[in-house]
Image (cartoon, rainbow, N blue to C red; front, side):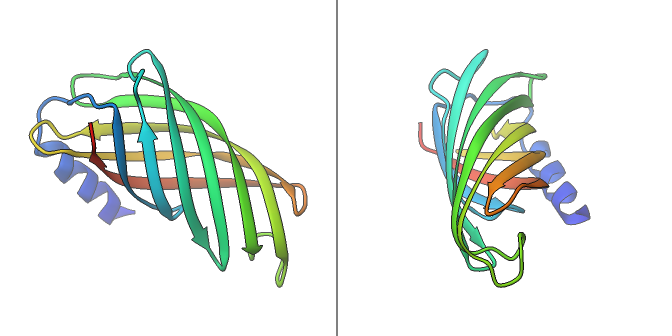
Length: 150
């Protein structure tokens, strides 16, 4: 966790003001995968994220809708909700369970886009409620690094 904080602080120090964007693609750690963010109606509006990733032999797809706004000149904050769909071996539920997973999640986070470089970093966390393969509550975090497309 100290390494994530150090990386986040370093990236923030490279820029003194945030650059706005409409779409970005990148990697997501914590809840691992690839992430695509479309923020066409970004500030004071919604942004949509589609992610594809996996853990412990399962493939997960998640879609989130965010409400985003400026926190200050260099950071934006966002909050929202989404759905998760998984297939495969899901060790987080039961040992040796293979099949379909379905859930919903809420998220809050901070985001920074570098002014002089086409990169974006974000850190988010939130609870999840899974209904398949069984009713279960979870909590996840993610650190994302994205390349700004537009």
